[in-house]
Image (cartoon, rainbow, N blue to C red; front, side):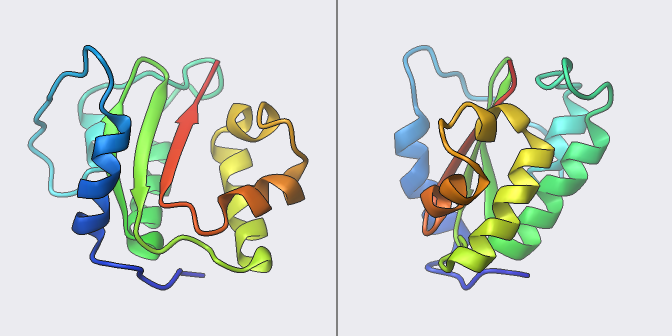
Length: 134
């Protein structure tokens, strides 16, 4: 189920980008029609301990682009930073999204110190999703 846009996805991405800029951040440009496609095109291997192919993960991020106005802000060694223009705002919706996060990136949920319901409460209304794989 999609969320309701809080603002244009590009405007949300601009605001969130300021939060993810870190010392040593580098700009990269990739010739793709959608940000999610950059994961596969660049040969990113961040979740190699969990997944041997990144194409299915790129498909999930494309789905999030469509449903939540997600924009790919950053790719790290084993991290992804995503802005979210239409985050879940109800607990029920957030619980479904939390389950997607757990399947996509188990470390993010399991290392949050919360159970799935607690994690769902945490992501309600969040406009920045930072995911990582150990």
